[in-house]
Image 1 (cartoon, rainbow, N blue to C red):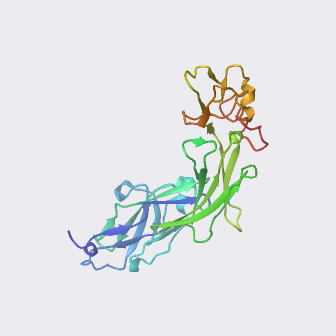
Image 2 (cartoon, helix red, strand yellow; image 1 turned 90 degrees about the vertical axis):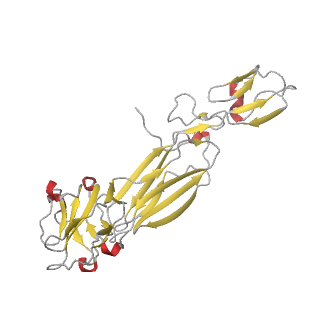
Image 3 (cartoon, rainbow, N blue to C red; image 1 turned 60 degrees about the vertical axis):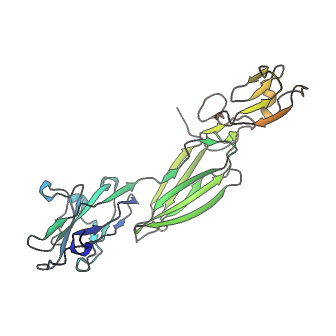
Length: 307
């Protein structure tokens, strides 16, 4: 295996993200065979979508001329010094149409031109990402994490959570992850959801101070309830399950389980324990967007309006 310094090589982050109407810097460094002597300097071209010049991909930046694809006119700038093998690119005022793969081509003069097959894939977001578990279960700690890319040197994002006033003892923590010269800011909201929170809205807002750039994303809490089982001697067939997963004995009314009671004391009832029999929908009635729960009254708060 030949030494890397003798080969054509490029280093770019495989994935990078940015918010619409902000900017993004794609870090880039490259190498070329040590035996090549650049003819009339070193030049570079950035392509969008594919690396093959013969297929005429959109030109994002070209150091020899200002001729670029119309969607990049006035938006791009080379921050790196090509003579120092730095091909770092800045793209301003980006839109979702700029999402895709970016390839760098080195031009050392004559036949010494090479388009590197490695690419940076840019994702331009019009709203922040929120990590939500596949299943949210009542009375179990829940973590929701909102992310904002921080790859624009002219501005730094901040994150706010929305509609959290009704949550029981919410906790907030933040983190900053830098990897491959790209950065992501995150904010994690931790709380214990109750059945009454089913259908409630939560939101994440990303904004850039001293600008008009604001991005929001809303989610509706779809909370499942743990079912309750009663351990009873002998045959437990005299137990019934009320809508929403409540269990009550013959002769009691389903409504008596609203505050945790299962009816009048019975000599046949020995122990009571909570077991996972598969979470069920918390809401009574409609399976989505219902605030009413097993043990709590509905609470005021933002709801997703479903027609």
